[in-house]
Image (cartoon, rainbow, N blue to C red; front, side, top):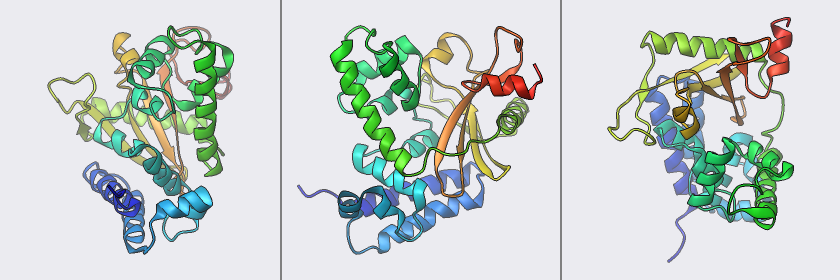
Length: 281
């Protein structure tokens, strides 16, 4: 059976992203970016899969209305058949699904990695593969950890070549978005989505915020990971996704510090030192 044209697959997912963002009251810039990309893909005579195979992500970036972030999204669709941004907007995103994008990582291993190491990004998985903690997960060992390390490096190499790595929003800006999200969520002023995970009754309980501040586009929502539920921190841990004007995406998690000089204060996980400097501690 012939593969379905990647142009149509990606365009369909981009249009669904646009529609969900519209329902969630997101900024028109983001909505229109997806719509323009879908129109451009549908107008192309050749399958973008061939462009990707021949010229890589750089070839996609040269297409009209695509840019670096959406080029990386098309590459993700080509590799996995999924789009993590769409999964998140639907309330379906999970670290386990993300880890399964790494060659050789199936559902059981992905779940074990998340449950044992409590990590939820490819960058954290790459670090675990290097520091020995991944190999220590039962059923993985040194050989499989090395294979996973190579697979993660290849995936991150693709996203980094598309320009994912770069300047990050200031911690004070991320903390401002976090404060705005929690305040508006408490006041029931935000749209709610019904996440599929840990939600057997399919209740629309998870508030979601789309906002633009300081030249960045932000999406914020409470963490819906197994670890957050286990520790009863779903009302405390806030995951913030941020995008630049090229639609390149990255993320961070904001939590309440439980020890040290910033105990009781909000901090950006992984950037605690910056938060301490901001707080003059």
